[in-house]
Each structure stands twice: as structure tokens, then as C-alpha cells.
Length: 301
Image (tube, rainbow, N blue to C red; front, side, top):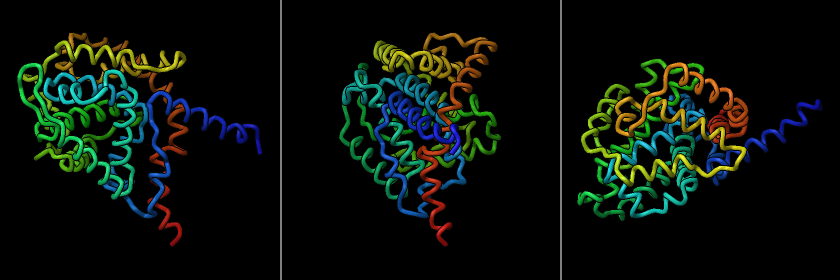
């Protein structure tokens, strides 16, 4: 065995520990290993599998999504009044990451059971926001808002950071594939193309507010809790999260768009920093385990 081969398991373990420390993930890879041959909701040939396997794009898109979602007062009230999100941000991100992983790479049973649990929780969350507007967490309009922000944020981050961005047709396919999850969560008649998803997101502009609660959420996210040696990397992630937001969202947040040179410098730094993490995940991450599960029955045959 060569020296590099001997170091490889140690490197994989070390990088995996850093990823778990940053994301708050507590998921077991065993959840994604069975049953053999089960392709889940999408399967390895889907665009969803491709996009969601890009860890850094998902991290950037996830942070961007959390910030944008907080601009909807009723959606934010449901989280503000019924969770400890502000004080346990990493745990919240970990749960969201598990949901995305389970619905993307899990068996069909795991995906559907995960969605069912979320729907059960949402059914019991109701109240009134700061403006006196009633909310129910599982109402189709709020599910639509959360879904549109997530899918457009993930896709925008992927297109910005991937070495080979998707074609327009593949972008539309991603939106259409992800609509299945949104519909299972209770949304109705979701858009099936990237352009219509962006247009419908803009349609919410009149109800969005960067109020005191949304400002506090932004401050919490900007102070994301990581170890001191991970802080420079998280600063890059947050800077990139703003870079992938639509201009009209930046205007609502009172943020100025970065200049082209600054944006490209951040993009390059993020891409370079992603190399070791992506190398590890491509070999022993959730998507790799799921692919082995799907292909297992064929190899046995």
C-alpha cells in the first residue's frame, strides 16, 4: 500500500467530521443503504440527484433560502412562534439537510415517511403574525412560498458554482422534478419551468417585509456558529449566498450587489475550497451510498 493510499481513509474521516461539525448533520448513512434496487422518488439519472450532490452549492443555496424565506411575515411567524430556530440554527439546518437528503436519495419509503412527518408537524402549527394575519403552516400558499424559494435558491447556487452549469432544459427538468416533493407537502399547481418559478417568486414581493424579525434572522445567520478555523469558509458561503439572490431580493434586504470582479473572486474561492469536501462526498457521502443501493440489485444479477 502506498503512502497516499494509507492516508486516504484518514483524510476522508477528517473531512467528514468537519462537514458534520459545520452542518449539524446527525444522519446515519445506513438510512440510505437499503433496500437494494430502490431508486427512491427520483433515481440516479434525475437532475435532482446531480444538483443536490454538489455540497457547496447546496450550502450556499440553503443559507440564501433561509434568509429569503424570512421575508414572508406569516411564514416567518410559523417558525418564530413554534421553534427555537434563532438559538439552534445549526440544528435547524441539520434537519433541513436531512429532509433534502431523505427525499432526494432515500428509498421511496424513507422519502414518503419523512414528508409525512413534516406534514404532521405542519398540521398543528397555527397562529397570527405581527401584522394580525392568521397563518397555518400547512396552507398551500405558505408551502408554495417555501418551496419556490428553496428550489430557485438551490438551482441558482448550482448554476453559479458548478464547473458545468445545467442547460436551460435541465434547469426546467429540475424544477419539474422537485415539484413532486412540493405537491406531496401540500402545495398546489407548482410551476414546472425555471422561468415561471422565478416569476411566481417575484409575485410574492408585495407581501414581503424586511421587518425587525427578519433582520434578527439575518443577524443570526450571519453569526452562524462554527469553530474558529471554519469561520473564513463560512464567511465565503454567506457572501456567495447573497451573490446568488435575485436583485429585487437584495433591494428588499437593503443590500448592494457585489461588483462582477468581487463576485467572481468569491465564486473562485468557494469552488477551490469545495474540492476536498466534494472529493470525500463523491466517495462516501449520501449520494454515493444511494447510488450503490440502486445499483446493487443489477450487480448481483
